[in-house]
Amino acid sequence: MTTATSTTVLRGRVVTPGRVLDDGVVVVEGAGVAWVGPSGQAPQGWAVPDESVGTILPGLVDVHCHGGGGASFPDATDAATARRAADEHLRHGTTSLVASLVTAPRDVLLARTALLADLADAGEIVGIHLEGPFLSADRCGAQNPGDMQPGDAALVTEVAAAARGHLVTMTVAPEVDGVADGSGPADARADVLAALVDAGALPSVGHTDASAAQVDVAVDRAFDLLAASPRARAGRLTATHLFNGMRPVHHRDPGPVAACLAAAARGELVVELVADGTHLADDTVRAVLDLVGPGSVAFVTDAMAAAGMPDGDYRLGPMAVRVADGVARVVADDGSTPAGGGAIAGGVAHLLDVVRNVVAAGVPLEDAVLAAATTPADVLGRRDLGALVAGRRADLVVTGDDLAPRRVMRAGAWVA
Image (cartoon, rainbow, N blue to C red; front, side):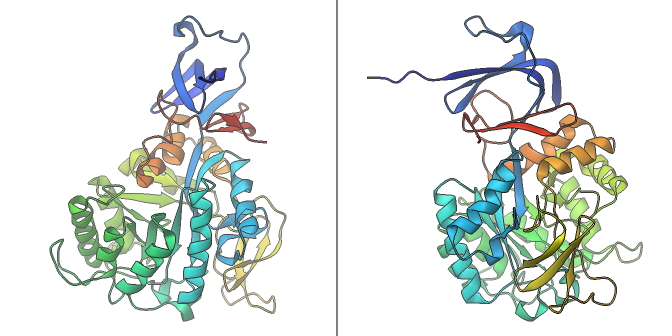
């Protein structure tokens, strides 16, 4: 006995990889995309609607998100709290989300990772990202420098075991002892880069005070390790929120930013950009896209618990955070503002807000969607996500012309 497969036919402005169909059609059968193309070329047998539903984007893919809806992944002690954060972004168009943790003691990292692995097993998130603990205290940003430590390959192995195959990336500073000590893919020394690749995870350069030369060495080693590993989910490593939490560029000391951009241009690395209008100037975002192309850029939110919530006081792991005028900054536990105004403590936007911001700044819609869906799916090694292409999972977002969300579909089912 077979069960009839439900069919949904949507007409509107359709964003496909590298192209916008002003009058396109997306046909969904069951949980998958059956056909995408111009409305006038739709095969017979599918009744094409007369009316447009609006703009149809692929479901967005956020590979760096700490929370939302008042809930924080680094602070979640039960599945319901973590699920609330994921659902906040799902309802706004992020159909695939990687849950990010922050630097914390070993027992906290292992417990949070195991909790998130349960959500990944259930399909509610697509992976886990650890932002730390092998980071530079000089570039700690909104993280606790007291919990940062030298590279520890054994801890990576423990975290990967707790993640049960769902560890996607780990942010590391190449200059920290134990992170990138090996000299090549055949080197027997067990540094953090080798342990991550062996676990099927991608190293991500970030929160670093490294020189350009130090980053070059680490990128070369990680890229070679990934190329030689049968467990690698993707062939390129990443850079965690480029520019933010890094030594700035200087013409006589180019530092990690220039090294990461060069690696992205060579096809060895994908750079994350928090293109929410707060973390980076819009001109910076456009310049990076011009330099390396949207196929080497992953837009991320770096969102924390305040995403989708009003201004107020929140937590990001051990750090107290105050959101004022839509910007999250670290404050002291007594509520006072540190000297210098407090580091930016993650984002408060949804990924669709990021797309809307960059399009308003002049980035072509198809490039913005490539960087917010297709390229991040490549980072995950998921060829079934991230694009409106026949054969992929039916994840999509229907928006108005203003790119505000109207409806969200994941795996062929409308999200409540």
